[in-house]
Length: 219
Image (tube, rainbow, N blue to C red; front, side, top):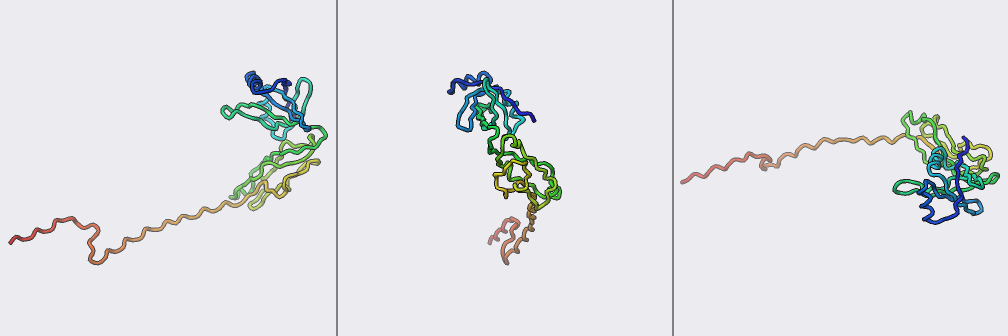
């Protein structure tokens, strides 16, 4: 996939009032942070940014072009309005060619496991791993085919094939996916209601007829 490019303008002023003015113009204030701690203030078109981020992942290196310089960078963070969801601010992190970097790469599982078709349940406790490599070697995502995963089998981080030059930083013993049998539902036993206890000797019947007592003979 070709690199996503964002056109940006250098931002000379800062502050909340300036940021509001930028947003009213359909743009988003942003900062590019360099490895040495240097920060460059910019702003870019809001609609173009939203469109571009639909086709990238957290580990995708994008290009940010300003009037005087071009940067290779990650979209490190986006701040959103909690009411309408609009993006308020963007943080980019610059990467340098030839300098190793650390990044988290998303794991994409593909296929329907054999164990699931046999009645098992798929569990996926891990969704990303951390790696170290040069920018040119950084994968955007890692696809894993789990079609052959059987019941009581699992895939660990150590089983993930990585390209040459990509060093694994995550714990290799972490489980990425596993299939296990579902717990059988406990049978619900319905007991019959116990028979009514026999009435005690001499006791009046529970549902005695209500009849008036005979009147006493008058002498």
